[in-house]
Every structure is written in structure tokens, then in C-alpha cells.
Image (cartoon, rainbow, N blue to C red; front, side):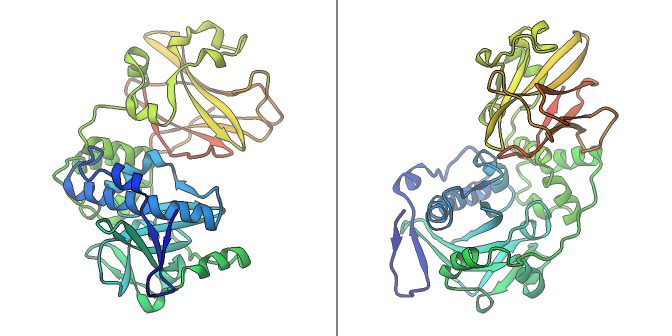
Length: 387
């Protein structure tokens, strides 16, 4: 990480790493149109410069939320990147503008409960010069209570005079006042019925809709993209990709590229659990699995077809990836419908240390299931597995 020196001593000027300048692709196929493509490019350059600084000056554990693999599905739709720094969430808001009179933050990063940040960093990106300028920051509470909301482009803006311009103050605040109240209350959005969500994905999934975030009322839009599985479906539809989350297709022709990037694959035989209930009866090539990091240990989530081929029962099973190791008491494995509704016998809880947790469910063709685990796995982002 290189910090450059400019005339204004309160400016934080960070060099964009040369390898990031070379790898950031202004023609990236990860986006559906030139507008989103350039938005992704600017965000990628911003992240490549700011994240190493956060890791060096704040904590080596600073990381992207929810995960780096999810970033294109955010940047296709909304400007900005979330970074977890200890218990705080920082939102990087990059812009190429030379007008530093105000910070403008998309409404999604302010009014979606699961997206909102603690601090918002104004970042000027200079791609041709190879650097970024972090020129100020504010809190969520400041944006909501002192910012101006523009219904035209759905942004909150805060005048530069309201920002803390010396970015070094942020590190001191984090160290000396870690419990400082930074957020104001946000009302949760009403839940979106599944059929309505699917209709919206079909409508907004057309790449010619250049700004889908402005095409429908915010309550509908927010309810759609706050659900990680629906956000991914919308993104993949805009790119014209085939269904990426069909477990039946995974078993027949291999795990999709999108699923592979987050860790799904055919069952790893090295992790086979001899004598595991239900597992020994199923050929390993008929099982899909995903490794998960939870509370410092590695676990394996298995999806196993059982019963008759024309009417299978699907078994979701969680095990410790270390042979002979247990799942601690307090862990939960839960299944939900695509629109996050519970159903009978959809949860298994470890009251004490156990070998496995499992939930078995019969599903209609085309039905979707969302899995959840407590404690939350690292980099967790909701996904909808189709059957």
C-alpha cells in the first residue's frame, strides 16, 4: 500500500496498485451494459486502494461484505462497496467527480436494514492518474438526520462542511470510542410475495433497463435486492445467464460456474463420513456440498437426494469437516421457502455437541429453498437452491 502526499495534509491519497490497474477491466463481461460496467470498474479501483489501507491502519481482518464474489451483483445495480472493520461497517462511495462539495450516497446503503453502514467514506477516483482521494466521511445518523434526500435519483447528500475531512480521525474514533452510536433506526421493509418478486426479476432483468433501481418504488426494489437470492437471480438474468442454482442440473451435468465460485461442488470423497446416517446409501456423485467457515472451524453442508428418483426426499446435512469432530451445542440448521417463510419441521438444533444436524424436505419440481445456519457462516449471502 502506498500513501501519496498532496498539498492538503488532511487528504488521504492512496495509490491504486499497479496490478489492480492492469486487472480492472473496463470491458468486463461481468456486467450487462456500459453504465454498469464502468460503475464496476470505478468501484474495483476504489476497493483495491482503500481495502489495504483499512487492513493496515485498522485491522488485518477488514474484509468485503458479504464477499468478493458477490460484488458484481451489487455493482451491476448500485454504486458502493461495504467493508467490515471489526464490528463496524464502512461504505465506500466512489466517484470521479472533481466537485467535492457534497457526498451523495445511494438510498440502498442507508435505508436497507441489512445493507446500512456505520460510516460512509467519500472517495474520489482518478483512474488515469492512478490514485484515489478519501476526502471525508460521515455516519449513518448524520446522513439520515442532516442529509438531503433526492427522490429523483434516490440518494442522500451531505454537504462537505458536515463531513469529517481529516480521515485520520476515523481511526482514533474507532480505537478510543468503539461504542460510539453511529446509526439511527431504520424501519424494515414489508416482505415481498414470491410471485411478485419473480415478476419483478423478469421485468427488471432486461439489460436495456439501464437503472432498474429507479424503475419501481423503493419499497419494492429494496425488498427485492435485500434478499441475496433474488439479487443474484436479477443479476444473472440481466447477464442472460441460464439458471445457476438448480441442484438437479448440478447432479446431472456439474455444478454451475456461479455456484462453484462460492464453494459448491460434488461431494469431496476426502470428507466422506463413513457410517453417517443416510450418507452411506447415496453414491458420492449424487451429493453436492459446500464448505463453510463458522466460528473458526470448517464445516460441510451436504444436499443429498433420498427415496425414489421420481419423488425424492432432499436431506440437508451439516457436519464438521474434521473427521470425528462434533458440531457444538447451540448450532442451528434451518430451511426456509424462497420468500423466507418457515414450515413444519424445518429446523434442527444442537442442544449439546452432536455429530450432525439435518433437515429432510419433500419439494415440488421447480421449488426453491433457502438455507440458514446459526452461528452465521463467514461470507454468508442468502441463496435460493432450486429443485
